[in-house]
Amino acid sequence: MNTFEPQRPIESTPIQTARDWLETHDSVALATVVSAWGSAPVPVGGQLVVAPGGDFAGSVSGGCVEIDVITEAQDVIATGAPKLLDFGIADDVAWRAGLSCGGTIKVFIEPLRVSDRDFLDSVLMAHRSRRLMAVVTNLATGARRLIDPQLAEDPELIARISAGDSGIVELSQGKAFLQILMPPLRLVLAGGTHVTQVLASLATRVGYDVVIVDPRPAFASAARFGGVSVLEDWPEPAVVSTLLDTRTAVVALTHAAHLDDAALTAALRSDCFYVGALGSRKTHAKRLERLRGSGFGEDDLTRIHAPVGLAIGAKGPAEIAVSILAEIIEVDHGGTR
Image 1: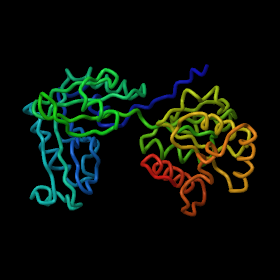
Image 2 (image 1 turned 90 degrees about the vertical axis):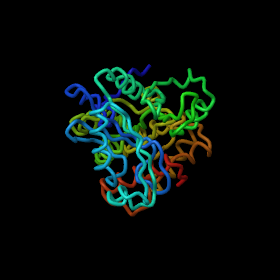
Image 3 (image 1 turned 180 degrees about the vertical axis):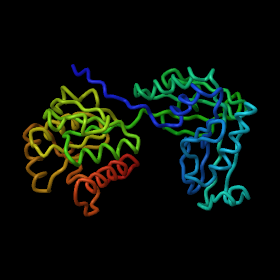
Image 4 (image 1 turned 30 degrees about the horizontal axis):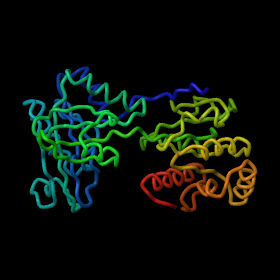
């Protein structure tokens, strides 16, 4: 049985930053987009953490209202009282701040104190262990609780969590913000090639947990991939099956048919949301024949995106990597390619 556990670099999320800052500050403020309408630049759940003095990390509007949120956050840190702010195109503050996108957002700012470190640790642990969790925060009092979806009892919460629908909910205790904490997306790359080097870096910045699998020592050198998890082994089902789930994408990039086929076999036997393979149409036609010979039907084979990547005329490793990641994002967001 595969016991490989991917390395997880410290998340550069506002939650992790808040936890880090609470080692040196008594209190910080966490701002969260709890409602968004129209062409708001940051979706519901977008967060920004603010330290005393104004240092911040994250975003709630892509820069439109950050200054005003940071200013209000200083008051939240000082008083310990949460605030619910509204920004829209008709608001003087929003217009002055530059929210000219035509959207409206509600931003909830809450204090986080040293006593909240255990709560933040629980959130981060759920993230690292790829467990679906939810946080319910009372918008009047700031009281919050972490919910295991399997133990939820409120019908509305159960329905919203099942749909992955973060937003404001009406509970018996009043209005609350339900934030669904989805497991991180994962990208398994078969082959430590030049394309892999760029793709791993880009995907990590987008927020993917990246795992590179290659049995060839020269290609599986961790020094080539800047801290990304590297597994020196065959990308076959017995090795990678525990890495594959509905929030995983797999791309075969080895340029070696036997290795690519092993990775694709593992991917097609899983319920990962994206399967891609590098190579020309001629190469892919031969690949399909081999996979048919291994027992895969047409419904299985049509899952493979090949030639991999959006058709943008990409040339060279960097552009190819961009096209691949763009296609993965498109599929994840509901595109069919």
